Image (cartoon, rainbow, N blue to C red; front, side, top):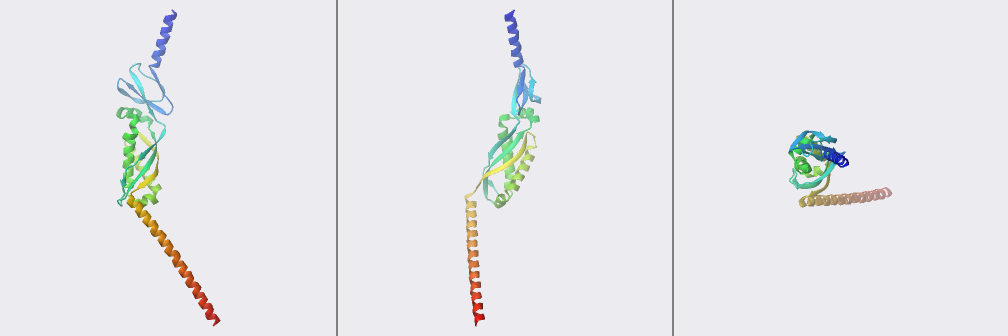
Length: 215
């Protein structure tokens, strides 16, 4: 009798463990039964068919990922590359569709990164390089807006923010900037020299006027 009771309890625990799943906080699950993905997204505790179904967990917390752009041509035919940090969140309601259509762990490379590349091409490729430097905040906001619009096509990802860092310019552009800075410095030196000459001329004139008064 004791052995039978032990077997029944063991089988009950075994069946319970194989017919339930838990999606921890910050994750959402899709239930896959014999290759069929459920239309419902699950959070927390849920039931599944023993031995025939399993849960696929997807991280739906706010995340951050970095994308390094290739050299992008600007409107004035310069090239620029930069590191782009994207803060985003996977839409929990879309988890079953994500599991059905793509590999969830590759959602960055399949969905996010190609659209970041398109957004950067749109904003950087249609502006002059000096505008990208002097109006970086405007360009960043435009990139965020375009990226959000591109991601809304399937709604898998919601973009929270886009940050730029480490811009890389072409050697030709860096040389042009150095030349411009050198020209600016030369202009400043010329301006100072001109002021000095004017001041000396004023002093000479003042002395001449003083001598004239004495005479």
